[in-house]
Image 1 (cartoon, one colour):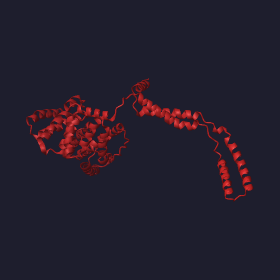
Image 2: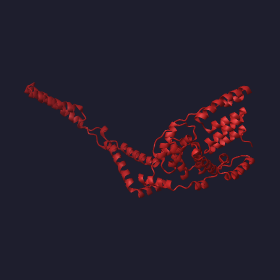
Image 3: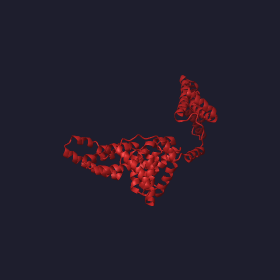
Length: 413
């Protein structure tokens, strides 16, 4: 019932649109059906008629050139005329096959109307008001200009799940929260606080601490510091790009126009403000030219299909490559010496690949656990620290890494 209500309302709101659609549909249908309902013209279908007419003309020409005697030409003309008359009489007689098929045109009309209506109902927007391009662009700019602030988004963001950490660790973080503000220039204190807040899923607090880290470093702040701050701002805002995060994107792109994280978040901003066409343009570039294991590229891959659909573009997502680590399971059936040797060799290769190409959170977690198996807790702790900076804005990634760090003995219960 809702379908017909929407159609009825759409016809009332947009009469010109529906009149044009109906006229085009009827016009195309008429062009297809008219030849089928028109009686077949059989008068000139017999090819002998044209032959006999040509022979009569040829006889006249031969007579003019005196190639035929008048009596001989008259006899030939009489014979050809007789044959022409017979052929004409045969062609005029209609047969049962020449009668038009009345059911075929009706079927074509029904199919045309059904396809037209069905296609529009599936990919069109019945009842949606007409919105010219300039109006859409203006609406997008209005959405962008009136976004909530970072603080407002942080308040509205859903609370993340509470991590399972020891009470002693929580108490230590509480002390650090008290001590750090008393030392506004203590880079180590604020860096530790930022990492601790991430582990406790207090992303707003982590963003504030990282903001202080950037302020302390000043002009010496590295792109990774700004990128980490951008990650934290977006995740603290519940995945939305605030005006403050947008300004940070501009700062990063001013120093490095090809920064993948900044370009991803700029595309996210466009996607959130009804400009999927611009989001698609940014995301396609980093997807097709970057490592799919990169967190920001993986995030773009997860959203680019929807952006392409909304932009009206048929985009095929390129296949992501990724190695397999099934050999880790086979190590359980080996002797202790062989297992240690195998894990050691895999650890070296995995560590080298992650250091050069990066990888998903699962690969970092495997490396942390592998170092734990080898008893190299310092290396496991170092990888755990680096992985947190890579996946700070991925709640699922941080969960995977935290579990791995706890299994490796880096996080004590």
